[in-house]
Amino acid sequence: MMRLKIGKRIHLCEYEADSLAEGLNLFFDRMVDIPRVKHGNRQTVDTLISEEALLLAKYLRNERKKWVPRLSDLN
Image (tube, one colour):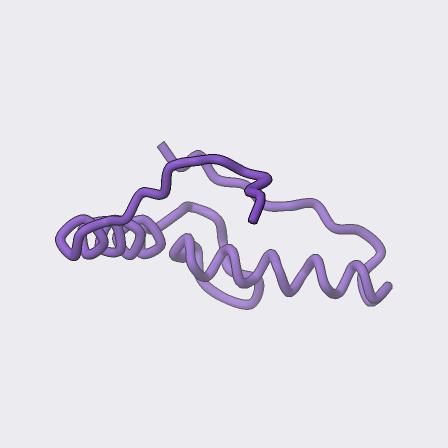
């Protein structure tokens, strides 16, 4: 058998995987100062990603004339 890609696989131990998952959860739960589509002044990063995906889908289906992504400084 011939390998096309030669590389080293890295496996995370349980602690590293849990730590990475916790860090991602904290990131997606951060609040950003971009108003929600229907209500509110702030929202989480998770909600912002979901709303932008829906707005992009509407644009691609020609249900919206224009789509300008709402971006946030995530520092």
